Image (cartoon, rainbow, N blue to C red; front, side, top):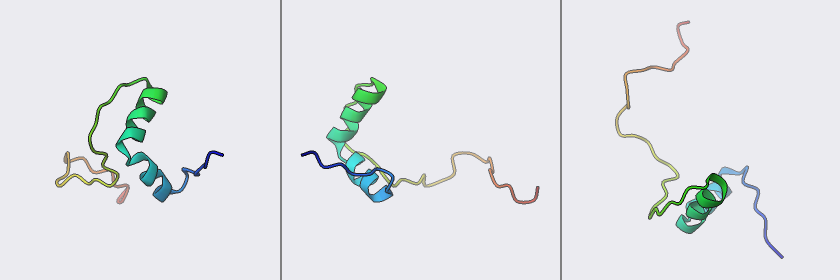
Length: 60
């Protein structure tokens, strides 16, 4: 029997898709893109802002 994990839970999603072979196969099967990555970042923040654009809705 195949074990099924609900991917609506962030922890399970990160656990599954942080595996390089799973991520590469997903990209190939769903997106039709051949990837050959060696590391998957699941929590990443840019060290500095990418632009001076503010998306805040305060003050409107």
